[in-house]
Amino acid sequence: MTLHGIRKHSIIDIMKTCSHCGKEHPLTEFRKSSTINGGRHYECNTCHARYGRNQRLSLHQITPSEKEWLVLVYQEGVCPVCRKSLAVSDAYIDHAHDCSNSVSHKRSFAGSRKEYECGCKQCIRGALHRRCNSRTLSELEQYQHLQVDSIKTYLSSRPFSRELTG
Image (cartoon, rainbow, N blue to C red; front, side, top):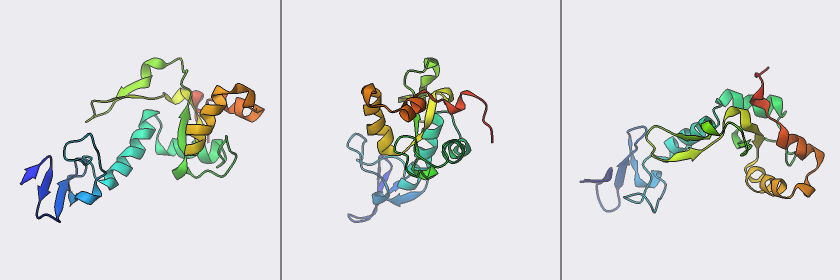
């Protein structure tokens, strides 16, 4: 019996087919969702992690090697906001929301009807820790009197606005 891609073997053993890799996995290998029929996402956790990382990079039109360059070479492995060590795997891409190239800031992806608000490569400011990107930086942008010179410099930086070097 199949319902929403879910095949039921018994009450305990429920399998579902991943929409990305096409393999059957136990239902526990799919994230829960209250908005999707069947109550689970369509891709398995492994595909979601792989697809999600690449999709977030493509939202900003950069490749994994460009992200690595940004963190390790341009920023020398340091978060520009908190000045602590930053690994490539922990880095979140930060971009200016007031970019003049707003035409390329809305994009949809294959298999998705959702349109994403995203940035172009030219509006990327850098790579930050998640907390620095989502909380600290937004507060610093809002309360300009709290900004020190290093934050003002960071907020105006655009490492991809010129050719990549190195």
